[in-house]
Amino acid sequence: MDEQESMVYFHEVFNPSLPRLGPGDEASSMRAMGVLRSAMAQAPGRRTSDSLRILDLGCGTGAPTLLLARHLDATIVAVDNYPPYLEELRRRAETQGVSEKISTRLQDVRTLELDESSFDVVWCEGAMFCLGFRETLAACRRWLTPGGFLATSELCWLKPEPPAECRDYLTAAYPPITDVAGNLAIIRDAGFRVLDHFALPTRAWLEEFYGPLEERLHRLQPAAAADSARREVYAACQTEVDMYRKYSEYYGYAFFLMSR
Image (tube, rainbow, N blue to C red; front, side, top):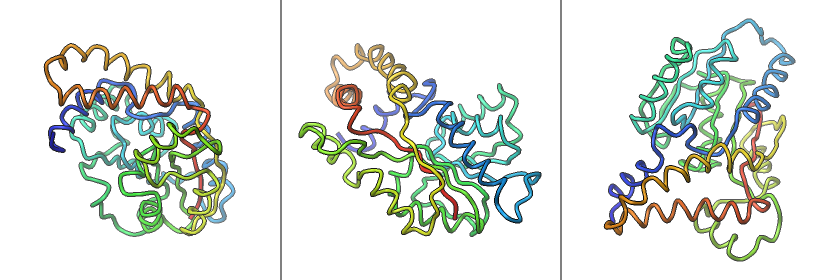
Protein backbone atom coordinates (compact mmCIF):
# COMPACT_ATOMS: atom_id res chain seq x y z
CA MET A 1 0.00 0.00 0.00
CA ASP A 2 1.52 3.32 -1.05
CA GLU A 3 1.30 6.54 0.97
CA GLN A 4 -1.37 8.10 -1.22
CA GLU A 5 -3.66 5.09 -0.85
CA SER A 6 -3.02 5.03 2.90
CA MET A 7 -4.01 8.72 3.20
CA VAL A 8 -7.26 8.09 1.32
CA TYR A 9 -8.24 5.44 3.85
CA PHE A 10 -6.96 7.58 6.73
CA HIS A 11 -9.25 10.42 5.67
CA GLU A 12 -12.15 8.00 5.41
CA VAL A 13 -11.73 7.52 9.15
CA PHE A 14 -10.70 11.07 10.06
CA ASN A 15 -13.65 12.51 8.21
CA PRO A 16 -14.66 16.21 8.39
CA SER A 17 -17.94 15.16 9.98
CA LEU A 18 -16.16 14.23 13.23
CA PRO A 19 -16.52 16.86 15.98
CA ARG A 20 -12.75 16.77 16.60
CA LEU A 21 -9.75 15.44 14.71
CA GLY A 22 -7.48 15.12 17.74
CA PRO A 23 -7.57 15.00 21.54
CA GLY A 24 -8.88 18.15 23.20
CA ASP A 25 -11.87 19.68 24.89
CA GLU A 26 -13.39 23.12 25.26
CA ALA A 27 -12.56 23.35 28.96
CA SER A 28 -8.83 22.82 28.31
CA SER A 29 -8.78 25.32 25.44
CA MET A 30 -10.61 27.86 27.61
CA ARG A 31 -8.12 27.29 30.42
CA ALA A 32 -5.23 27.89 28.02
CA MET A 33 -6.94 31.00 26.66
CA GLY A 34 -7.39 32.30 30.20
CA VAL A 35 -3.66 31.98 30.88
CA LEU A 36 -2.84 33.98 27.76
CA ARG A 37 -5.47 36.62 28.50
CA SER A 38 -4.05 37.13 31.98
CA ALA A 39 -0.51 37.40 30.61
CA MET A 40 -1.60 39.88 27.94
CA ALA A 41 -3.31 42.06 30.52
CA GLN A 42 -0.03 42.29 32.43
CA ALA A 43 2.24 42.76 29.41
CA PRO A 44 3.86 46.21 29.38
CA GLY A 45 2.83 48.36 26.45
CA ARG A 46 0.13 45.99 25.18
CA ARG A 47 -3.28 47.61 24.76
CA THR A 48 -6.04 45.14 25.60
CA SER A 49 -8.34 46.98 23.19
CA ASP A 50 -6.22 45.96 20.18
CA SER A 51 -7.61 43.21 17.96
CA LEU A 52 -5.34 40.16 18.09
CA ARG A 53 -3.73 38.59 15.04
CA ILE A 54 -3.85 34.82 15.59
CA LEU A 55 -2.32 32.00 13.56
CA ASP A 56 -3.93 28.58 14.07
CA LEU A 57 -1.57 25.87 12.80
CA GLY A 58 -2.98 22.50 11.77
CA CYS A 59 -6.50 23.74 12.42
CA GLY A 60 -8.36 20.76 10.95
CA THR A 61 -12.09 21.44 11.04
CA GLY A 62 -11.50 24.17 13.59
CA ALA A 63 -12.74 23.18 17.04
CA PRO A 64 -10.17 25.50 18.72
CA THR A 65 -10.38 28.05 15.88
CA LEU A 66 -14.08 28.57 16.40
CA LEU A 67 -13.69 28.83 20.16
CA LEU A 68 -11.04 31.53 19.74
CA ALA A 69 -13.26 33.40 17.31
CA ARG A 70 -16.22 33.29 19.69
CA HIS A 71 -14.30 34.53 22.73
CA LEU A 72 -11.63 36.91 21.44
CA ASP A 73 -11.53 40.14 19.48
CA ALA A 74 -9.25 38.73 16.80
CA THR A 75 -8.58 37.97 13.17
CA ILE A 76 -7.52 34.36 12.71
CA VAL A 77 -5.54 32.73 9.91
CA ALA A 78 -6.35 29.00 10.02
CA VAL A 79 -3.88 26.73 8.21
CA ASP A 80 -4.34 23.11 7.14
CA ASN A 81 -3.25 20.96 4.18
CA TYR A 82 -6.53 19.09 3.54
CA PRO A 83 -9.22 21.03 1.62
CA PRO A 84 -12.29 19.21 3.03
CA TYR A 85 -11.23 20.18 6.57
CA LEU A 86 -11.03 23.85 5.64
CA GLU A 87 -14.36 23.65 3.80
CA GLU A 88 -15.97 22.24 6.95
CA LEU A 89 -14.32 24.92 9.09
CA ARG A 90 -15.77 27.62 6.87
CA ARG A 91 -19.20 26.00 7.05
CA ARG A 92 -19.08 25.79 10.85
CA ALA A 93 -17.81 29.36 11.11
CA GLU A 94 -20.74 30.57 9.01
CA THR A 95 -23.19 28.62 11.17
CA GLN A 96 -21.72 30.11 14.36
CA GLY A 97 -21.62 33.64 13.00
CA VAL A 98 -17.85 34.11 13.19
CA SER A 99 -16.84 33.67 9.55
CA GLU A 100 -15.75 37.31 9.23
CA LYS A 101 -13.03 36.68 11.84
CA ILE A 102 -11.49 33.65 10.11
CA SER A 103 -9.53 33.28 6.89
CA THR A 104 -8.30 29.86 5.80
CA ARG A 105 -5.02 28.98 4.13
CA LEU A 106 -4.45 25.69 2.33
CA GLN A 107 -0.83 24.81 2.99
CA ASP A 108 1.35 22.22 4.67
CA VAL A 109 2.90 23.48 7.90
CA ARG A 110 6.22 22.05 6.71
CA THR A 111 6.38 24.49 3.79
CA LEU A 112 4.60 27.43 5.37
CA GLU A 113 6.27 30.80 4.85
CA LEU A 114 5.01 33.87 6.71
CA ASP A 115 6.33 37.33 7.43
CA GLU A 116 8.37 37.71 10.58
CA SER A 117 6.63 39.24 13.63
CA SER A 118 3.24 39.08 11.89
CA PHE A 119 1.14 37.47 14.66
CA ASP A 120 0.37 38.23 18.30
CA VAL A 121 -0.62 34.64 19.09
CA VAL A 122 0.12 31.27 17.55
CA TRP A 123 -2.25 28.45 18.50
CA CYS A 124 -1.42 24.84 17.66
CA GLU A 125 -3.33 21.99 19.28
CA GLY A 126 -1.72 18.63 18.62
CA ALA A 127 -0.15 19.50 15.26
CA MET A 128 3.50 20.29 16.00
CA PHE A 129 4.47 16.72 15.19
CA CYS A 130 4.04 17.54 11.47
CA LEU A 131 7.24 19.57 11.41
CA GLY A 132 8.68 18.58 14.79
CA PHE A 133 8.37 20.25 18.18
CA ARG A 134 11.75 22.03 18.10
CA GLU A 135 11.38 23.09 14.48
CA THR A 136 7.84 24.41 14.92
CA LEU A 137 8.83 26.36 18.02
CA ALA A 138 11.61 28.03 16.03
CA ALA A 139 9.21 28.92 13.21
CA CYS A 140 6.60 30.25 15.62
CA ARG A 141 9.18 32.46 17.29
CA ARG A 142 9.92 34.06 13.92
CA TRP A 143 6.25 34.62 13.16
CA LEU A 144 5.40 36.07 16.58
CA THR A 145 5.77 39.72 17.51
CA PRO A 146 8.22 40.44 20.34
CA GLY A 147 6.36 39.52 23.51
CA GLY A 148 3.88 37.43 21.50
CA PHE A 149 2.26 34.26 22.83
CA LEU A 150 2.18 30.60 21.85
CA ALA A 151 -0.29 27.95 22.98
CA THR A 152 0.34 24.36 21.97
CA SER A 153 -0.40 20.80 23.06
CA GLU A 154 2.25 18.13 22.63
CA LEU A 155 2.34 14.39 23.24
CA CYS A 156 4.32 13.60 26.43
CA TRP A 157 5.13 10.85 28.82
CA LEU A 158 3.14 11.64 31.95
CA LYS A 159 4.52 8.87 34.15
CA PRO A 160 7.96 7.22 34.20
CA GLU A 161 8.72 3.60 33.36
CA PRO A 162 5.80 2.75 31.06
CA PRO A 163 5.19 -0.94 30.37
CA ALA A 164 7.18 -2.31 27.45
CA GLU A 165 4.14 -2.61 25.18
CA CYS A 166 3.25 1.03 25.75
CA ARG A 167 6.85 2.27 25.43
CA ASP A 168 7.48 0.34 22.22
CA TYR A 169 4.23 1.50 20.63
CA LEU A 170 4.70 5.18 21.43
CA THR A 171 8.38 5.40 20.54
CA ALA A 172 7.64 3.75 17.18
CA ALA A 173 4.65 6.01 16.50
CA TYR A 174 6.33 9.21 17.70
CA PRO A 175 10.11 8.79 18.21
CA PRO A 176 10.71 12.34 19.62
CA ILE A 177 8.33 11.77 22.56
CA THR A 178 9.75 12.94 25.89
CA ASP A 179 8.33 13.84 29.28
CA VAL A 180 6.92 17.20 30.38
CA ALA A 181 10.23 18.33 31.87
CA GLY A 182 12.00 17.51 28.62
CA ASN A 183 9.54 19.59 26.61
CA LEU A 184 9.83 22.48 29.04
CA ALA A 185 13.60 22.45 28.50
CA ILE A 186 13.09 22.45 24.71
CA ILE A 187 10.71 25.41 25.02
CA ARG A 188 13.18 27.45 27.06
CA ASP A 189 16.03 26.57 24.71
CA ALA A 190 13.90 27.89 21.84
CA GLY A 191 13.74 31.33 23.46
CA PHE A 192 10.34 31.22 25.13
CA ARG A 193 9.26 31.95 28.68
CA VAL A 194 6.90 29.31 30.10
CA LEU A 195 3.69 30.77 31.53
CA ASP A 196 1.91 27.56 32.50
CA HIS A 197 1.44 23.95 31.52
CA PHE A 198 -1.09 21.22 32.30
CA ALA A 199 -2.08 17.76 31.07
CA LEU A 200 -5.29 17.25 29.14
CA PRO A 201 -7.83 15.13 31.03
CA THR A 202 -8.57 11.62 29.80
CA ARG A 203 -12.07 12.69 28.77
CA ALA A 204 -10.46 14.95 26.15
CA TRP A 205 -9.26 11.72 24.53
CA LEU A 206 -11.88 9.10 25.32
CA GLU A 207 -15.08 11.14 25.15
CA GLU A 208 -14.32 14.10 22.93
CA PHE A 209 -12.11 12.38 20.35
CA TYR A 210 -11.94 8.60 20.50
CA GLY A 211 -15.64 8.08 21.23
CA PRO A 212 -16.86 9.56 17.93
CA LEU A 213 -13.83 8.15 16.09
CA GLU A 214 -14.54 4.63 17.28
CA GLU A 215 -18.20 4.91 16.29
CA ARG A 216 -17.11 5.89 12.80
CA LEU A 217 -14.66 2.99 12.63
CA HIS A 218 -17.45 0.56 13.50
CA ARG A 219 -19.67 2.00 10.75
CA LEU A 220 -16.86 1.69 8.21
CA GLN A 221 -15.85 -1.89 9.02
CA PRO A 222 -18.18 -3.60 6.49
CA ALA A 223 -16.49 -1.63 3.68
CA ALA A 224 -13.14 -3.12 4.68
CA ALA A 225 -14.23 -6.75 4.64
CA ALA A 226 -12.77 -7.46 1.18
CA ASP A 227 -10.02 -4.82 1.21
CA SER A 228 -6.85 -5.72 3.06
CA ALA A 229 -5.29 -2.25 2.66
CA ARG A 230 -8.36 -0.62 4.18
CA ARG A 231 -8.40 -3.13 7.02
CA GLU A 232 -4.76 -2.33 7.77
CA VAL A 233 -5.45 1.41 8.15
CA TYR A 234 -8.63 0.86 10.15
CA ALA A 235 -6.84 -1.62 12.43
CA ALA A 236 -4.04 0.87 13.09
CA CYS A 237 -6.63 3.49 14.11
CA GLN A 238 -8.34 1.03 16.43
CA THR A 239 -5.00 0.03 17.96
CA GLU A 240 -4.34 3.69 18.76
CA VAL A 241 -7.64 3.89 20.66
CA ASP A 242 -7.03 0.61 22.47
CA MET A 243 -3.51 1.57 23.54
CA TYR A 244 -4.64 4.85 25.05
CA ARG A 245 -7.54 3.19 26.83
CA LYS A 246 -5.07 0.70 28.34
CA TYR A 247 -2.19 3.07 29.18
CA SER A 248 -3.68 6.56 29.56
CA GLU A 249 -1.95 7.08 32.91
CA TYR A 250 1.45 6.94 31.17
CA TYR A 251 1.04 9.33 28.26
CA GLY A 252 -1.13 12.11 26.90
CA TYR A 253 -1.11 15.65 25.64
CA ALA A 254 0.20 18.50 27.77
CA PHE A 255 -0.79 22.08 27.03
CA PHE A 256 2.13 24.51 27.09
CA LEU A 257 1.56 28.27 27.32
CA MET A 258 4.51 30.55 26.65
CA SER A 259 5.61 33.99 25.54
CA ARG A 260 8.38 35.04 23.19
